[in-house]
Length: 134
Image (cartoon, rainbow, N blue to C red; front, side, top):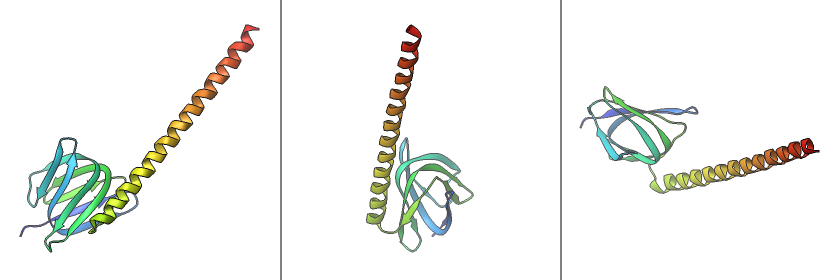
């Protein structure tokens, strides 16, 4: 059975996995799979779940917020801002749900800050214009 290496890169940590036999991920065009000795390939992964299978039969799931995937010379390189890996599908599902909720909270906080900033700018403009009208 032919295998390849998977190199996972994030600012906080890196991993090198040997003896992978396949990888499945998703980009904006849909799901795709790679096997050992595939042609050179590059894509931008979308937020979600990817996985690779090892020659031992073990499946390892990856929760990723997107990233750059590059396959060359029988090595898969995946660069992302963070990743979580586990052979347990349920664990990865919980991580994705938690991350999605955290991201939504950050978005809500940002939107609230922008609204407050807009209100403050309007208040200052009103005070400035009202002061010049006198």
